[in-house]
Structures are given as C-alpha cells and as structure tokens.
Length: 83
Image (cartoon, rainbow, N blue to C red; front, side, top):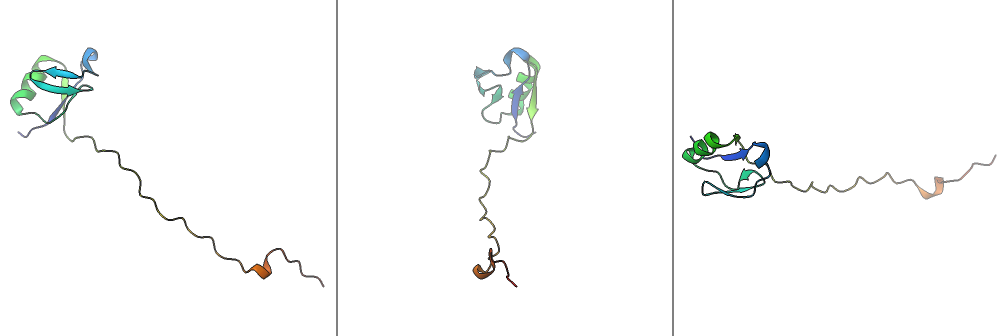
C-alpha cells in the first residue's frame, strides 16, 4: 500500500497537535503521509481513519475583468423630443 495520512477520530484527540508513535500530528492529522506499518499501529491503538487525498489548499479565485457596459451616444441621453 502507499503512504497515506491518518486522521484521529477519537473524541479526546480530534484536535491533537504533537507527536504520537514518533509521528507528528497537527490538528488531529499527520503532517506528512506515513508508511503502512505506522498506519496500522495508529489505527490499532486509537480511533482513526485514513485520509485518501490531502485537503486541497485554498486558492484565491481568479480575478476576471468586469464586463463593460454598452456605450450610449451622448446626444440621445436625457433628451426629450419636442414637437
């Protein structure tokens, strides 16, 4: 199997930050993917689950130029036709 991250689901350890089994955790999730052996050790000891894909980093939305309003000829604006 491939290396994957592990997320702690034990209610008392969900936000755990520190070291456990010589593995660094931040907010209840391993900082880096861990080997199959470490995954098995963590999964057997505390309630946890494998994280298939790392969470995507939040990207700023691309800024698109604003659409221009159609130009109105100046001689037609606000002019009432007098008969």
